[in-house]
Image 1 (spheres, rainbow, N blue to C red):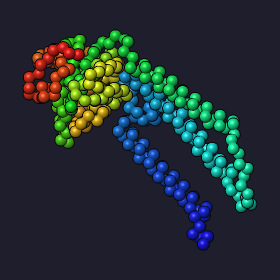
Image 2 (image 1 turned 60 degrees about the horizontal axis):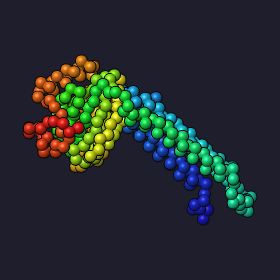
Image 3 (image 1 turned 90 degrees about the horizontal axis):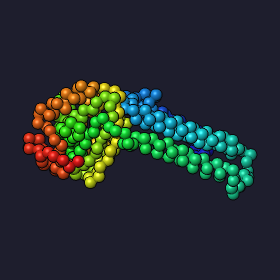
Length: 297
């Protein structure tokens, strides 16, 4: 009978070993996925390297939170293992240990410490969030980004020009990126995004900027960024908005001021002057149809 006894010390050891292997494999796989997709490293917490002024703030908060959580996790695991070893049942233990109803110092410890942790997390999160959505500074460029099923329109307010986006057609062949709208931003200049929606809730997200914000019908949301690195980045909708949500994509080009001005001149020469009215529906904005422009932002 003993060889089939579930209290045999061999089985827990095997189970712990199995879980350790599974945990190690999971960590390796997830770490590989993160490194491959996000192109970050340990110094950024495997987030994309910051390419905006606010990106460093997000990265610092992210890394600080993980360091704290890992430290708490190690402490809990350490105390658990210590209790398992120090208070394990011995062969000569024939009686139950003394039963205590409460321990005031310990109860204070595990009540007060978590509350302090929540307060600290809340403080730093609220502080950084307030800084990231602060729009009190005067922007150099203002772009009204309009979300629609399932693409984007861009109104460049200072230059009084616009760009109409069409839904991405993902065929798996090269060239798909050329069919989706491209948002131009000048490097090292403050851009304010004025976010609106034509139909349902969308979310304006440029992953490399480490910041996103919802776009809701009947409401105007705003935030500012200062891109610090030239390059081409990807943008997408981060809110499930219908059947073709995954194809609601756009490009972002952060360029020198001269190249930005040249693109504004190209839009003007192409007749894309004026600002798209936010009340236009998607049938009026389909490729090949006449687009009515005007105010409404």
